[in-house]
Each structure stands twice: as structure tokens, then as C-alpha cells.
Image 1 (cartoon, rainbow, N blue to C red):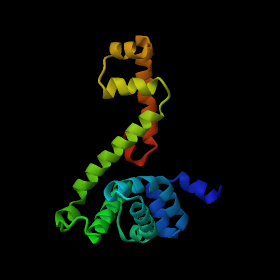
Image 2 (image 1 turned 60 degrees about the vertical axis):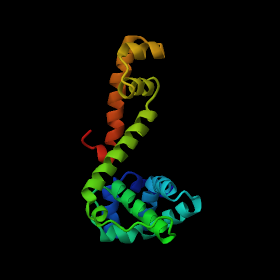
Image 3 (image 1 turned 180 degrees about the vertical axis):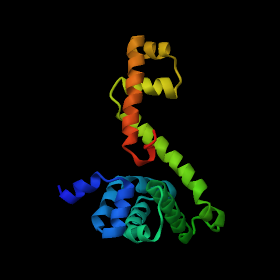
Image 4 (image 1 turned 90 degrees about the vertical axis):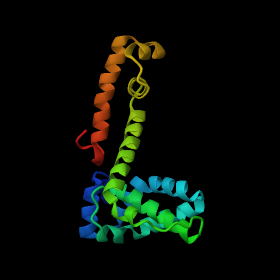
Length: 190
């Protein structure tokens, strides 16, 4: 594997953006694609309902991403990329006349509100992914206790575990979740 690529894997999104602004290294765009290409594709597919169109938009976004990084001040890359993707999809749909709605200036200017909602959505997705990465029985115990709001006893009976094992799995699961979430930029204060 390329040493530079390994180095970039260790960088946070902010570090990658700052590095790109100073060095214009296309490998950084490759790293961003590696991290977020599947999310961008999923969003495009959701809006466009057509795999070929979605693939085209993904390519367009990542081909022009370097220029956009240089032009825009980006606080939270993942949410900014989501808004960029969504806007690109809406423009494509508008060009194809699938939808004929005027661009609402409020949507464009009210980035803070959009960004906050996008961040919450991203955080929930990251939390769900992190829970699924937990080892058994921590993953199931966390889901049952926190998401389905079962009691210790109900979790114990459902999973056929002692109460002490359930309590231990919750405690260890919370600790491991906190560690996993701190690895992501959006959860540094978790």
C-alpha cells in the first residue's frame, strides 16, 4: 500500500482539507472518496432512483470536489458533502424536468439549520454503525436496553443472561461505544 495513502487514513477530515488546501494532492480526494463515496452514492440513488444517474453524480461531485474545497469554508465536511450531494441531485432532477420546483433561497441561505439536522442524522448513523460493531452480547444488550428500553430483567430473560452479565455488557458496551465514537470527528466531546 502507498505510504502516503496510509498516512492520509490517519488524518481527520479537517486535516485532510487543510492538507489539500496547501498541497493540492489528488490522493486526498481519493481518501475522501474512500471514506464517503458509498454515502454519496446512497444519497444520489435515494434522490435519483437510477443507478447510472447516481454513479454519474458521484463522479461529478468527486471530480470537482478539489475546487469546491478551495472555494468554501467547511466546518463539518460530512454534512457539507451531504448538502452538496443533495443539491447536485436536485439540480439533475430539475434539468431532467422530473421535478419543477423553484430553488428556495431560504434553503440555500439557512445552512446552519440544515447543517445541524444533517449532523444529527450523521451522528445517529455513526452511532448505529458503532453499536453494530460491538462484540456480542454487548451489541444486543445495548440495543435492547437503550433502544427498545427493556429493563435489566427483560434483557436478561430475552438473552438468557444473568443480571450481572447484562449489567457488565451495558457498562462495557457504553465504554466501547464511547471509544468508537471518539474516533470520529463529530464525537470528540462524546
